[in-house]
Length: 176
Image (cartoon, rainbow, N blue to C red; front, side, top):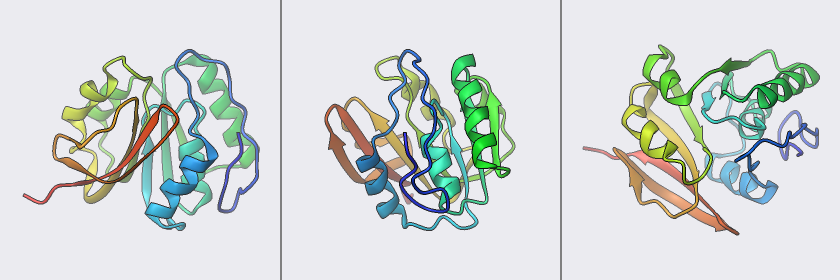
């Protein structure tokens, strides 16, 4: 899998064969970062179901001040550590753990979150109650799922697309 933009453009990342892992395709990442703006300078991001880490490494490549990659699979974690070392990604932190527990306990605040869990296993529904806590008021949420979503809790889809069986969404917190 290759990084499509930023300082690490065209660099390749190892992708391990892990059940449920579907790295976000190049075309979808290009669309996402066009929506966000190519430059994420100073932003703090979390890739909650990191898998290959491609979304988080892409954000780091585009200037994010910090990126936290959360993953529980040991093989995927090993590949994440190798990728971080190869890229000399000192501003990328890799956390081994459960996404829901991370959301419940992190004291960190993020500008952006990538939420791309294994499909049809109920992860989006389990994480949804905890989305507001670690997110800054003006933050953004990127969600990939097997079906189109109008929103999640206080978050509303502002842009969306699909590629094959992937539905992808950029969400912002609704104004109350």
